[in-house]
Length: 299
Image (tube, rainbow, N blue to C red; front, side, top):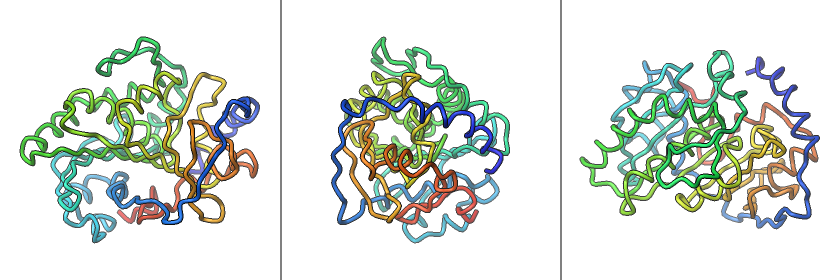
């Protein structure tokens, strides 16, 4: 994790130097008195676990009472060129889950993926508008595994007659969860609904992409933590834009529902990171609802 600090030092000043015009940004927030339901994202905790503990669902985090009944159908990845992933059935939520690992900064490929900042047009998603562009690194990493993942999802759909699919991820895994969700929703039809939960996710594409995503997956929640710098990258100046759906945990541990796509309120991710300076160590959480990441996963 510490090895990522030089990379962060290179890209963060650009993000700070290119703040968007605040007059064009929705700044309203509402405090969530009941926090937010993040229990349906708890399976994220297994996404960082290696196959020897994840594949038989014996990792320590897999034994959490909320997901102990989780049934793993398929998994893959090498933790490097292809992020660890899994597809399974969550009986208590009547939901198929697609989980994605985030960046392992000790490996080369995830770092190369993250810094491949150029945006490219794509026809990879069903009915994708021509003006949509997506982060090259995220898109290429997604393409390396989505065919296998989707075959597993289809198998569970048939066996369980499911109507709900959850895609979930942290960091790089958050970006992949968004792309997975968009790809899957375009191929399963309107009778099956995909919903996406991300933690500490970066921007993934341009405004056309963000709008297209929300149109196809309106049940999107992107959870951000305190002064985590990753959600303010890649910088807006390079043409990136977040989706709607931010729920932010501020420095006092209070949850806020942040309106709009790039909310500069001090109780939202962008505003809090700019006001107080970023803190890389807050990228890993801990998040509420039993969701912890990376070394905290207790694999």
